[in-house]
Figure 1 (cartoon, rainbow, N blue to C red):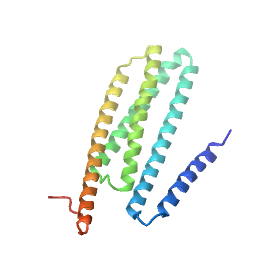
Figure 2: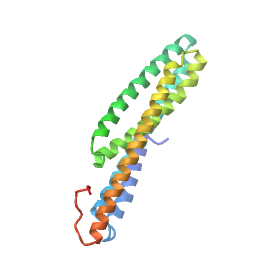
Figure 3: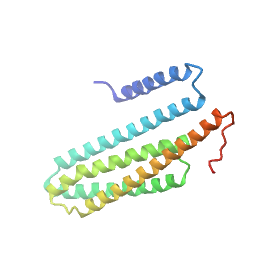
Figure 4: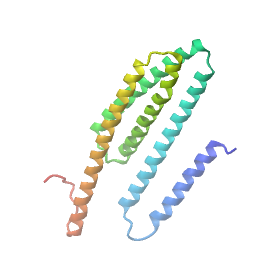
Length: 191
């Protein structure tokens, strides 16, 4: 079996190898398109890493709950619900911070992508723990509230991301039109 560190190193090396030749080839590639490509790769790697980490965490929790005695299951499920609520609080704080930040910076784009991955992972974690709570006879009211809050966070995140993408596309179109008309792109996005 391949050591996970070697596998991750191979994937990163493959991504870099695929990106570097493409960035250096052709005179028509601008520095902006190379930077955008690098940002996309970085965002993908971060979100994949987050998804993998959370999947492994959930699988470990599932095994722990499955192997626990009947008496311990309810406590383990309550502890897991506490952890999921804490993650939701942290993600809501991160979402609020990003909502106030300039999302067009590479760092914030990566944070936004990672936040989306975390929200999706949280939703899957709630989906995984809910049947176990029902089997153990644990009150699922907290899980229902958690599911509702995660859905609201996911909807607000999608709306903000869509707005950011639209703003970026509009800014790109304005810059492209100004450039094709022989003008230099302006930083003024107002009328």
